[in-house]
Image 1 (cartoon, rainbow, N blue to C red):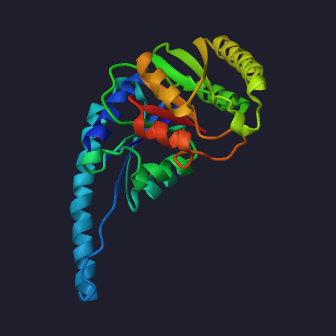
Image 2: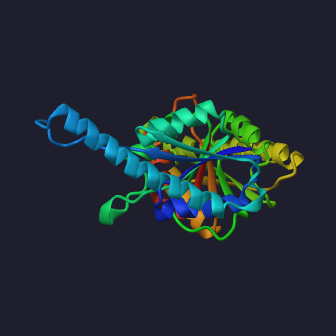
Length: 286
């Protein structure tokens, strides 16, 4: 699995680096983006502004090379060949462009807090990467002790197809236990469903969901994965977050598309809320 690790010197990025020991990789791209600021004085003589910009770039480039050196020295032994890349530009654009050029299977990066609220994924870098990167994305908000218990929310057959494609890459070094989760919203009479009809209709929906989950579990088990399934009725967001806590999930593995193929990462209420509030890292597959 070709993996790109975004390095920026933050503690979250360091946690992302440490997490690599749980992943199976045959090539690692270490990437640092130089977001060199333009001189902030519009009346500055152009030649002076240009020289100041180049001086800042030289200084930041030297710091970036040190970051890459340190990251390379801390990589696990099993990572395979390592490519070190330092590029000037917007971090989001640099990461996405490099992932495309390197044909990366997975981007690994730390989540950044914004001030005292520490809202994890509102930053433009994470937002743009999650919505535009062509491969899977692993966001690391905090230290990880292991990756064993994995929560896998599913909503459609497209989710099943996508997660099977991703898991065929054998991304994890150690065996994992997958909890497949389907959450059905409760039916309300206000939705045009008569109160007496709501109960059997909800039961039928739950039965169909259970059949779908078991079919998915069977496919995953044939690929060597240990699975269990659960179907709940309630708030989708709260159910995912609750199950992640109750099951002590080490990772939430979730898709980036809705039931009809409409991208919902961050923009959709479910993905947005889960990505902001999850108690563990999140790996988003396409």
